[in-house]
Image (cartoon, rainbow, N blue to C red; front, top):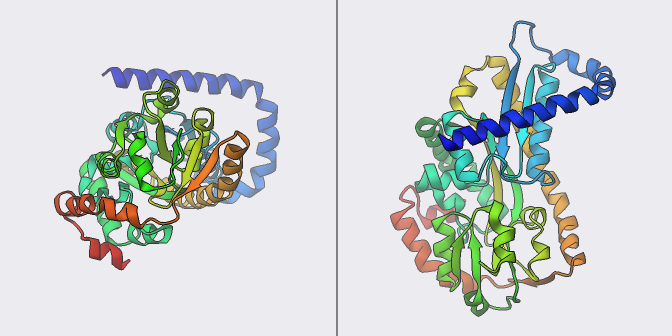
Length: 351
């Protein structure tokens, strides 16, 4: 009940701010409307279709490709619907962490969310190899499995059992390790007290490498590093830069142990309640926006890396993954046997 009240307050306040901003921007909106009138006229739905609002939440910051992608989806939907579909975006964890947002989405307190992959570990753990490091060789391998029958089965169970419809997925890039000591070999991992996502898979995997693992919400990461609760973290460049980790970390170790994605989901009951025309618009907008956001993330990575360099961060690189893979092999075998009974290492390797 407390979480529901908090989300309700945040959504109400944010919409009031948006209304006030709209008053001061009316002339700009009129000009924009005139410019886009001819382009949008072909996709304006019949007048009897209702106006709807989609409240979309994410823990990620405004400047990330994830949020820019959701904004692109909002623009596409506004154009396709002739202004009848409005998407309000609540970024930066203003409605809570990923667990809270997943719970809110499931019960319909919000209509859409852009996650990492945490909902997989929470709701369909038998498929949480999608949320584990050291499982996939590279981006192409990950996407081949994501688009296979295994990915289809995972999304079907998410929909049938948890009221979550997966609209699409965007690529964020590989995850890397930030730290206050250089990582030149696997032995240096044992010197880390590392923040991991709130995922047992990450914790057990990095523990197998010798690190001390502490699960911390992303919204609390900067402060935890600043106060010395942990001395390391890991994540893709958009996460490292948007959370300004270059201000509290001296090193970034480049690696390819995990290709990071953002999974966009919608409350299925809400989606099913919409006219078929709107469902088609949402499907098309999500496909276009996730493709746009994936390309944007790739373009941004070079810029983000330079931003870290300019801030004084030094780079290391895991050029040989063999020692790491050998170290985590017993954990991977355990996971496939006990947690991921829907597949095998051999099946994953075939894709």
